[in-house]
Image 1: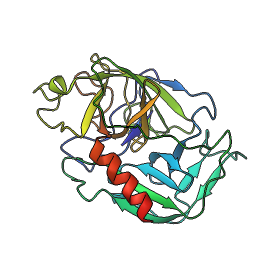
Image 2: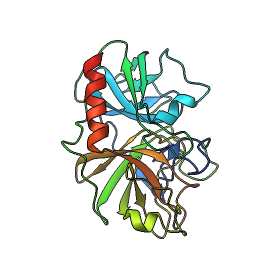
Image 3: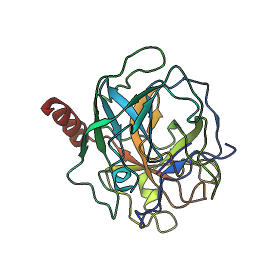
Length: 253
């Protein structure tokens, strides 16, 4: 699952092996502190985004981690995970809602909602991220940005400070070719990275948002290792159906 220095965010998980861990940022740099007030850190080595004062959107595969606890699972307003920061807000989780059609083998529909126990105090350090108005596909070549606290090199440790990386959308036909993911990319996914490798999300970034043209376009889902040529990061895409599901679930609680 992985958010996000000299290489771009590596992939979150090994595509055919959903047991892979969250992604990290590969080939990126340290983010400006508190420049992404919508980012959430989960204590299961995943990321997420605050979409309502009491709702966080993340990846469904994060729930399968053995360390997932409902108590004190979400931190908002963080830059450093280990240091005391007065901007931080910590929340337990009241309700977990995974997408009913999430497939743990293919990672299709890799979305999960977390209802917090209490509402975040919205300020310049903690704020919500708007969902897109529609589920349009993202054009090949579009420049995007990913951030997170994932590993910054293969077999490394998660980053203590928030990292970011710029990645480029790779068209679905290319990403489904035998050299890439061999027809493993569904219409509910898209690929982003660098064709030459070196820039990616990686373990620890899963569930975090990818921003394309200033629009919340998807979430970190999986990948094969991190930052490899022809193995870009794979992201869960906001289709119209996914956006409808999110709206209905939030309204029902």
